[in-house]
Length: 272
Image (cartoon, rainbow, N blue to C red; front, side):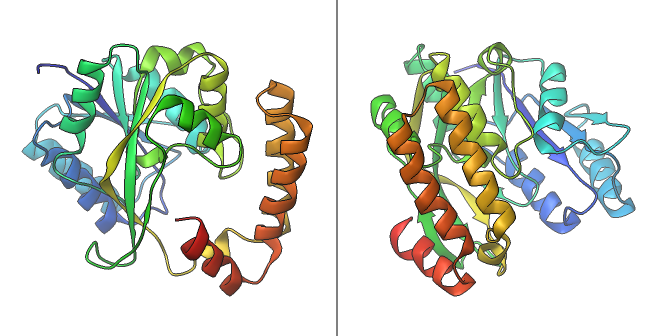
């Protein structure tokens, strides 16, 4: 296996520099590391973040390709900019506060090597608080394409921080759109509409960091309104019908406005 690939990361000034360094280290300490890391600085970075960038560059000469943006434009649009600078057809994604397991990229590359028709590969993720040995849940997703398509009609079918995809397919469908915290879900549905083929590896390949206040941050009227807009968008795409859209709006909006503790219970008990 000699497939080269890019790793695409978006960095914002509020991202924790300690977590950022751990994310980069986990990406480089792989059984099959990336050929390049395209790092988009979304507006500006802090002194502490810049020190980490300089440190990585010193240890791994020319591995980092830093793309500074004049102003903050949001993660989705920032990733679109970064894709323009990715040299290779295969692009892996990662967030600045997660930790890739050492075999992640090797596992994903093997899927692409053995299944030429597949366009996007993700995996399960272990959700943790504070340290990876404090796992609170595992987000498991269906494996094969038809199962993923069915699942996508009600829930996000891929774990975004663990994906690897074909750059050409992302560009072909118009890339990411700015859509609240659901940029990735919109992208997956656009890809499915365009005939892309998905696959989820049936093991966790990434530690996904969750803050203690995550369930609180996912609630409120603003998020409920976004859920309505999301389902209406999918209906207009022709991906879901009206009964499914109504059912999703009722369930997903309800989950946004209930008390935080109840929302946390539902996520942990029924959605993981």
